[in-house]
Every structure is written in structure tokens, then in C-alpha cells.
Image 1 (cartoon, rainbow, N blue to C red):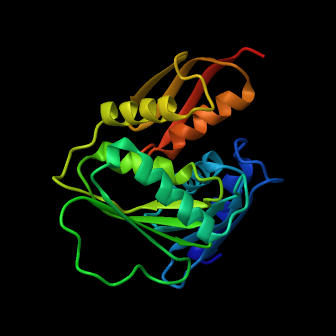
Image 2: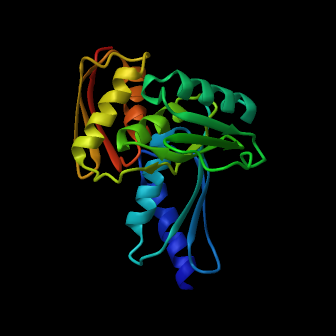
Length: 241
């Protein structure tokens, strides 16, 4: 069996064995590019399945092979790119942390308008087929992560590519990740965050405490996965129902 074909087979087998990926609700295809790079594409039933699939694929290969992520999350509410664009713009403009930022949004198939590069901090959001790409300059990793969370919270978003540049550069840490997850939980009006404890080690977040029900526990876990830089989420929340 050729090497590329063997790698594809290894990844497919690993994904099939992964209990956290539901084969009935997640359609994941694994293929290989001519240069040997693997491609994961298809649709998953949530952000957790998408991130776990990428993690499993990387861990299942002994060779140092690149992976192209073309996985999309099934939107909770189908939306056109125009509506997604408007909701993201409103979310960014209304967020106090971005009060002094310039916000630019682009249409689905066209690039953002040509113009001189903005001076200072700004965010550009371009949307294509439900995929949100964030570019621009922000003042901290916290701002970068918050912008990504707000984009993920738009129900029609199928993926968020966070390319925001942090200036001045800032070293990342588990404390930064923990604080960002805590911020996401506190800002999420659909869950009770005061009964949830957050910790992070080696970019893996652990949630402990109490959730009202299974839905709340799942939403809290999704919020953690939405945070840029999180490599894993361990959900130890106790469900009251």
C-alpha cells in the first residue's frame, strides 16, 4: 500500500474508533493531496467533533504530515452570508472591549474594499459560505480570543479562521487561556457560569462544577472549544437533571 494511501487509511480508522465522533451526524472525508498533505473535509455536528477529529488525525500519524482543515460545523440556524456578516458586525460594534476599534465587513464572494491600511487597532471580518475569516490588529490575546468567540456565537457560522495580529506581541499561557474561557462563560447569557470552575494545563481546559442540564453542559463545553488556542476540553460538569 503506497505511503499516502496508508496514512489515509490510518486516519480513517482512528476516526471510526473515536467514540466522541458520531458517525451518523458527522460526515468526514479523508483524502491526500499530491504532495502527501492530508485533507479533512465534510461537516460535523458541533465544534467539539471538528476539533477532536483534527486532534485524532494528527495523533494517528507517525509521519510528520501536514493536515488541511476543511471541516465545517453544521449551523444551528442556517443563514446566508449577508446575515452572518451583519450579525458579526453588530456583535463587534456593540462589544465594549472593541469600542475604539474600526470594524470592516466584507461580502460573501468579494474581497474587502481596497483602502489604505487603518492606523491603530481594527478588525476585518470576511464571510464566504458560512466561513468567517478575521484579520486585522488587536491589542492583546484576550481581544483576539474575544473576537473569535463572538464570531462563533453567530448561529450561521460554519467555521472561524482567526488571523488577527496581536500588537505588541504577547506570550501565551494557560492562565491566558483559562481567563479567556472564563470570559466566554460569563458573557454567554444562555448558561449559568457562576457554578462552573475553569482550569487549563498544556492548553487543555477542564470544566468542573455544576450545570443545570445536559444542554447547559454541552454549551459550556462548546464555549471552551471556541476559544482560540484550546487544544482539548475535559468536561467534568455534574448535571442536575
